[in-house]
Every structure is written in C-alpha cells, then in structure tokens.
Length: 622
Image 1 (cartoon, rainbow, N blue to C red):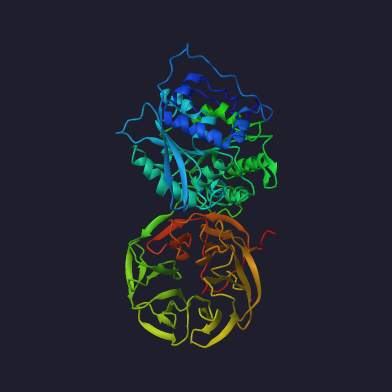
Image 2: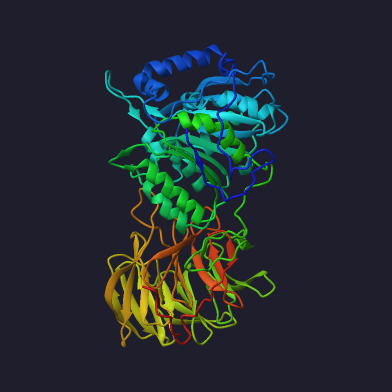
C-alpha cells in the first residue's frame, strides 16, 4: 500500500526511524502471537458473540479486499527470533454509567507480561472495545514493542460504546455509539476519568500522569479519542486517530476551525486516512482528515500522518500500527508540552511563547468582580467573605475594605474613587481610604462601567441600561431583551459592547452625544459549547488595538474590531470565569478570577481605562 508521510525532511524520531524517507513496514508478528493473546476462554466467547451480533459488517471490514490496498502478507519469522512474552487479556467486564444514564458496556484489559504491580503503568484507552483492538492486532503489537523497549509498559483498556436496553420486548435498544463518540464536549472524557479509569485502577496500578496516557480509536472512535484529549489535556496527551470522522455528524466538522483558533494544547497526534474513505451526506472523510492535519500543522502541534489509498477500514492502520505507536511514544519519558517556539502565527499576535496562567491569590470564597485603577493595581471583591481585596505591588493580597452584602460590579472613575454596585439596590463610591458615599441610593444596579463623564449601569429585573453622572443624575439609555452579563466601551468610546448571558453573540451600540445607546446590532460572533445555545459570557475587557476579550465557557475569546474571533485563550482553571481585567504596571497582564482564585498571564497587549480620555484606534483590516 502506498503511504505518504508528513514530517519535515530530515526529522529523526529515534535512533532507528527517520520518517522523512521512511515508509512504514507491516508488523513482523507471527499469527501464533496473536492467537496466544486470546487464550482466555471468556475473551474467545466474547469475540465470538461480537462477531455473531455484528456479523456481515465486521467481516466486510476485515475481508473485503476490493476496498483499499491489499493487506500485507502475514510474516512467520518466529524461527528467526524468539517470541516476546505474551500479555494477558482480562474481561470482558461490564460497566454501568451514570454519566451516560442507563448504559451498559463491556471492556477488556490487556496486561503486558512486563507489568509489575509496584510500578504505575502507562495506559492506552481504545474505543470500540476488543473488536477494534483485534482489527489492529494490538495485543500482539504491544507484546513485541514493550518487549523491545520501544514503548513503555502499557496497560490497554479496550472499551465498547454504551447501549441502553429497551423496556419493550422485540424492540431495538438505544445504541449510544454515535452520541458518545461523535459528540463534542467533555462528557465522554468525564466518563473515562470518573468511571472507567477508576474501576480499572482498582485492579491494576495505573499512572495518572497525562504524559503516560494514550487514547485511540477508528472512525467515530477516532474523533472521540481526539476530543477526549482536546477537552482534557491534563489527562490524555497522546492521540492515535485512524480514518477519523471529523465531519458533520454531530459537529466534528468544526474541529479544524477550533484547532486553529484555540490556544495550543500539549498534545501529540498521529493521523491515518485513505483516499477512498467515505464521502456521504455528512462530508468527505478523506478531505476532513487532511483539513485536520492542515489545522494541526498550522497551529504548531506535534502531529504526524500516514495517508494511504484505502477505504473506511482498518487494513492500513493495522499495517502501520507498530510505527504509529513508536512515534507516539518516542522520547518517553520526556513530557509532551506546547512547543516553546511554535506558537500559532496568529493575526492578533498577542501570545508570548511559554507564558501561562499564574495563580496570584487563592483560597477565597466567592469572587464576583475584578477591576484595576489607573496605575494597573488590581482590586477584587469576595461577597461571601464581605471584603474588597487589593493586589499590592509586592504581589501580596491585602484587605482594602470590609463590607456587608454583595458587590456585584465595581469600576474606578476618573476621580480615582471606586464605584460599586451593592446588593442590587444602590451605587456606592469608595475613596482611597475606603470611606463610603452613596451615589444612587435606591435603584437596582447589577453591572456598571465607568466613562470620563459618568457611568452606565444595568437594571436586572427590567433588562434596561441607564446612564448616570457622577453626581447621581440618572436617565434610561436603552431597553434590552435580557439582563447584560457585562458591558464595556470601545477604546475610542464611540461604541459600547454588551454581552447577554444566553446569547451566542455580543451587541454593539453607538454611544450618542446624550449617552443614549442606539443603532443596536448583533455584532460579535462567539463560539459556543457543544449542544449549548449560550456562550456563557461572564466578563469583558478591551485593549488599545480595539480587541475585545470575552470570558466564556470555552475560554477567553479574543475578537477583532470587526467582531470576529481570532483566538481562544485557555481558562486558568476548569471553573467559570467570574471577573476579567487587563492590569499591571505596564497594562500587559490579563487577570481572571474563577470565584476562588485570581490568575494572571502576561501577553503582548496593552489595556485601556474606560474612565480615561478616549484613544484613537487603528483602521481594522477588513
């Protein structure tokens, strides 16, 4: 079978393989080794039942030579070298899931001969269970590679998709494979981490280091494997994807765009595909895999591919499996990390290679809002603790003000005083000593943002925005269809960004001379989590280039002046972001709070104060 590889010329992966001039050879594995891996009667019965149930579809994949290239001849060189010690197959075990309610599934555990209970083993999770592992000849391949020291001691976990039995006789069950495998989002990753892996870890000593975990699959199982690692790179970092279903079945066609826009994650990916793969209503598998490769390469990932001329089957993948695993595990135990000099060539050009989130304050109860003053000193409120804190120049957190009630929003004004929305019923002004003055005594106020002449604030119950002078003279600015989650003016103060919590876009208003808001437009396009209608916006910030930073469920989405997302920065933790501001002495630190902690990250940006005079913005690139 012709194979085309995709690494730069001269890149040496290890002492034995140079993939710049290398065509993977078929595995030299005697059939006897493969059969020995299935000596367990329970496995033999399980495989037999699987083949009886799936019948023609499985046999067609494994025997139809009219699709793709002919499989390589089986090598029988056992007389030329000693057989590696065979691992064992435990299972099938049955697992019920709460994350996928009502489902039952089987899984098998491959235990290599070299496994020692006193040493944590690496793991390889394979979707579609023993059937997929056998199509790849995986137990025998692992026997040989582990024996040769080319991959570490690895426990294989071969798990089938879930099935929900029907309550009515002679009716079909619910087959969960497409729902579990083709869907985006973190549900399947949570199933692995919260249900499957703990159950296997009760039997075998498994490493929890994400660098010690591989995850693999074919077709829908392939996009499932990639998605689990994409959602949880803190748990999985090596991905094997064969004939991956990155098409429009359940949103998988969006992955190439998300890969290009999202901050690079510490992943290593091997892709396999064939030019005669499926081309149906959901898309073209061959083109979709090439699109994924292009996106991963553009974004600077550690990715390799092997293209063939086969169809939607496992023949080619079986042939290259030893080389694919050698590549995935090359240089082990060196950790997989984001390449320090391979940041995405982003149009926004705001990232600093190697700069990550750093926790600057923690152990708080309920951080509601974050802001900074004219010199970039950050303040944040913890309503449950009844305090406003200040991040001092020595990086220590100090109490600025003790208070009772909730401060839901606060911003500095041009007079260096801090304006606070308290208890959704009044606006307070705090001077540099923390002394209080009531600016608006009796008016619902949930969110506010300051300008040189006054401030806007939102009324939560009636979905309105109001304008107030610093003397407390209030008038209505605009009616909305929902309460705003956040609002901020553009750096030139000509327009106002408003984010509604339930919408996948931001609103854009012109600020009139009388500070009313007019010419409403759904302007900023936002990416939303899978199966959600809302982006989960909680906070906004802006910089001197007119970019808008939107704290959302997917991360911090960075929009240009024209409302297009160029980049999605990772969140500092798995918790929702509750506050966002660009601060620091040089105004180049992005601060984000998650309710319990405050984090900071240095970027190539410069924040602006909404309460300072407006600045001119560059003309956007259309």
